[in-house]
Amino acid sequence: MKFKSFIAALAITLSTALSAATMPESISITYVKSPFNLQNIVMKERGMLEDAFKADGVSIKWRVINSGAVQGQAMASGDLDFSAVMNTASVLMAAGAGNPIAIASGVAHPQKIFALIGKPGTNYSVKDLKGKKVAGPKGTVLHQLLVAALVKEGMKITDVDFVNMDPGKAMTAVVSGQVDAGLVAAGLIIKANAAGAKTIATCEGYVSPNLVMTVRRDFAEKYPEAYEKVVATNRAALAWIKANKSEALALGAKEQGISMADAEKLYDWSGFYDVLTEADVKSLEADQAFLLENGMMEKKVDVRALLLPGAMK
Image (cartoon, rainbow, N blue to C red; front, side, top):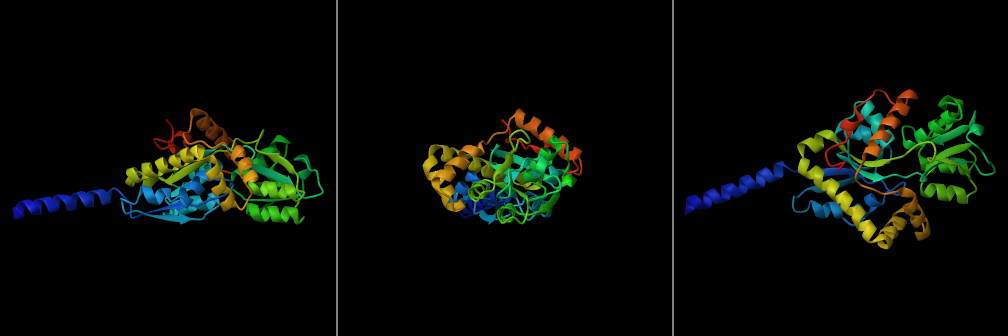
């Protein structure tokens, strides 16, 4: 009897150890509220990841890293497992630089949520920006928007005085007249417009922005069950948003410090989705060609290889 009890206890111990081996002790993931990352907000504020991994004893470590370039660097160093939201321009640039990054799921197709704005009292066109000071975040979809808009008018990035600046600071600089134009997103567009800064251009006609969830490739390979659970939870957040839109918008408005009316507007601008399609692959290939041609990406990568199983269905 004692021997049987010993065998039973050993089996339980081995089963527990095997289960633990398939799961990490913790998962680090970004918390990025802007431009209007409602899945990320809902997932964090409702504790969805914590609930999903509670039985596994896995702790969730939320990290605020707004820059796609810095997110890529954090993955390369092993300090970050997932970026809940990353624009594909940043993904491609990170991959081209050799960072071990992969696309796990879709997030949004926002056309109007990124914009180029001019300082109050002006009515600039893209052509008018030649020789002007433009502020915005380097290595992002906003940077890509600026380059694409200039190229369409027969210009290049060196035709403007481009200052690398966080979108929030860029908006302040534009509204105060310290710079001629700036690259901003989401609620910052609404605030800038209210302060008299007119929108010069959005992504429409220039760039097809795509926000995705990314993962450190070796994490997905080492912990496939955890990887799949994070993706499933992110998609469950979108399903909850669609089923509880008013409550979701209230959460987004609170976190962003905006009105419900503005939250509704940003929701309509965002184009939330979760499963990538062939159209997304073609868009990635087109973006890569543009980034390489304009010196924004170091090395060509296999775009299709960036997508992990489950990202497309």
